[in-house]
Length: 102
Image 1 (cartoon, rainbow, N blue to C red):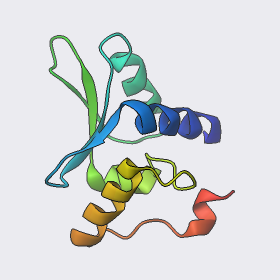
Image 2: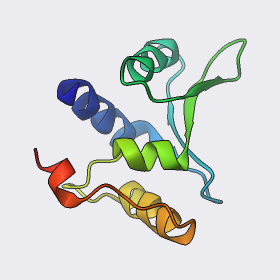
Image 3: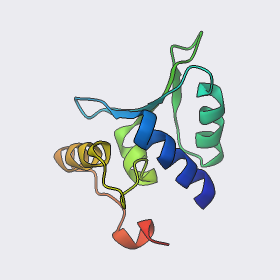
Image 4: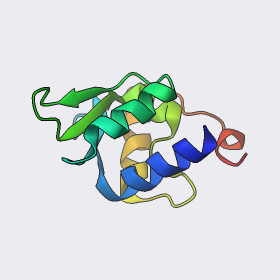
């Protein structure tokens, strides 16, 4: 599962987004959305494809993105910073740093 998480973090750091209101995070990809959904399912992270007919992005609630550490905490990209700011604002506690550095 560490390899899947690292793969998803790479995708999220390049093709991910945090909702400006802090409700969800997503990864956008027209050709690969269903594959990404399967990866989240493998990790038992609840996610949804949008739009349902022709998926272009996979969304998850902000708390699931924080739990997974969707954006790489070591790189500390703009998206990661946005995730953490929204998490703090919404009183979602990120996992301890030791979780990130296994």
